[in-house]
Length: 395
Ligand SMILES: *[C@@H]1O[C@H](CO)[C@@H](O)[C@H](O)[C@H]1NC(C)=O
Ligand SMILES: *[C@@H]1O[C@H](CO)[C@@H](O)[C@H](O)[C@H]1NC(C)=O
Ligand SMILES: *[C@@H]1O[C@H](CO)[C@@H](O)[C@H](O)[C@H]1NC(C)=O
Image 1 (cartoon, rainbow, N blue to C red):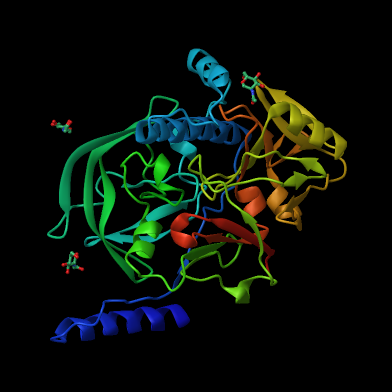
Image 2: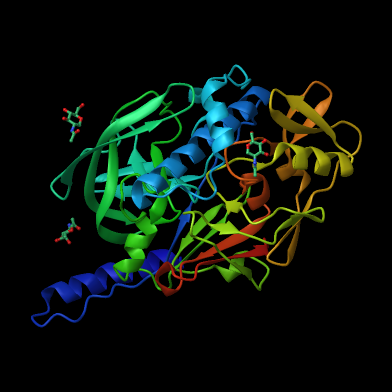
């Protein structure tokens, strides 16, 4: 396997450098592929509504981190909406967050110090933290003396201490990576050992670079790129390259507006309707989420039935299957029936396109429902100055 060979080569080169008396500039540049996996159990309708709640708090947390880091309010924040949410108990279904959080996301092995755990690779956040008991700081760890707290909507939270440590992902190593060690967490730890964020530094609570930025800055990646193929079979995360063997070339690119901290794009459409300028590509979200009224309109026009659940709009269908075609970076992507169907409610099948106000200005989030249908290439070129994201249909 290419990745294993290159990783082995990188280690051998590093060892050779170490014994040399006049060391060459260290540059163990490489690429690697991780096999990643998702829990196969389908969502319930209540689980779906809990996912919306989880997202609401995830994004509010990102926007708060941004404010702490920059001293400015994130332009994506809809303050009317978030203040309203803070005072309203929303209808979110009866399944607690513990039952669904972290279980639907894409996870793979991540090593910090001598600890290897299954973390969710999440392009919609920027910190890496381990659930309690999954990270024990060893000799390579440094305690920063700083604590962190991540609060979730239903009162669950994770709190702990921030370390820096050497990390290894797919055999690629970086030093001094900020790692959160949760001392306490009321989240369910049964299916995922933590989260590893892959958005931009400005939304990191730890005020530190996400691990992929560390790899890039330390010269460990062949190219400043990573690619996700979130395929039902053979899902992969490619680090340092885009694997042209797993998509129908070419990747079509669009510029990313990173000013708000996200892999945020404009110009996308769904069934011809513009999704506006605030479209976030998020591997850590199960669904596609958009403004309730717009989702209801698109659902109806496609032959579905908008189902109002509290403030949320689900798109149901019973007879016939509505067709949803996204146009992203000029590429048409029609959802496969398998990726489109999220759960059922009575007679209705429920599509993975959900309308909900999560406190973003007219925001759309392109999660798993969409991403399962494409290879997505994230390009941090020019030191992150001109990031792009590219899409191609999967092979
Ligand atoms: C971090 O949390 C621990 C445990 O609650 C506490 O003892 C310590 O004082 C906190 N450190 C800081 C810098 O707040
Ligand atoms: C961890 O990083 C430090 C600092 O670069 C380095 O000296 C050390 O060799 C690394 N340890 C391991 C086990 O990779
Ligand atoms: C902001 O939130 C309010 C209240 O939820 C909503 O009515 C309004 O449409 C939102 N504005 C934008 C630009 O999303």
